[in-house]
Image (cartoon, rainbow, N blue to C red; front, side, top):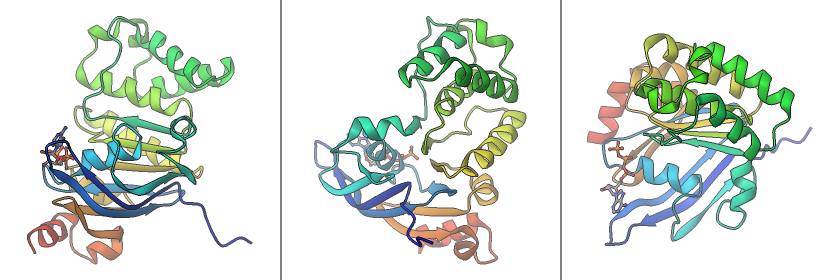
Length: 243
Ligand code: ATP
């Protein structure tokens, strides 16, 4: 048996400097494997969003390399975007569409068959109690409903890599619970999730791996149980960032 598994995401030594001179990410490397739910934590301004946007091809970076399932995000952006999904911290959806029109639009972009799109839309809408609201205009949705619609839109093409910035903000307790279950089911098929969060107890329970970023540099990463080593993630985090 081949013992080498292609990482779903490989970040090697990336550095990103914004116009104006701020180096937000410095020589950062990280490997994410099939089945990983990888949490990404750090203080405000530490460089999480900059890293996530670099991974999904929204931001350019001046040094290093990012591979999505072996494909280079800077050289093969379209091929990479076909196999990833990204939800920013404040998703901007098309307000003038209904939820269902939006999901069908996404399904068209990813050339999903009629059967696949219908099955997945009805499954995820049911999971998130959004079935009835799908016929309403997105402009009438609450923040949490928009977040749920964005999640369904991201999942219907079954990406290999799912990247999320602060995904639990605005979700009610039941939706949070359902989403965590969906995340676990999703990675069981060989996909992976990489998400930033400030909700450390959720990350501690949900993620098998975690990375801590401070001032643009990775200061700890690896298996959650090895990193916490019997302590809470919160106390380990405080030790690492203040140490
Ligand atoms: P938060 O937890 O507050 O969302 P973050 O870890 O996601 O923070 P980033 O948004 O990646 O942090 O920001 C990292 C650094 O880069 C910060 O110092 C920020 O001020 C800076 N930065 C972010 N976007 C830009 C930009 N467009 N131009 C210049 N500097 C930026």
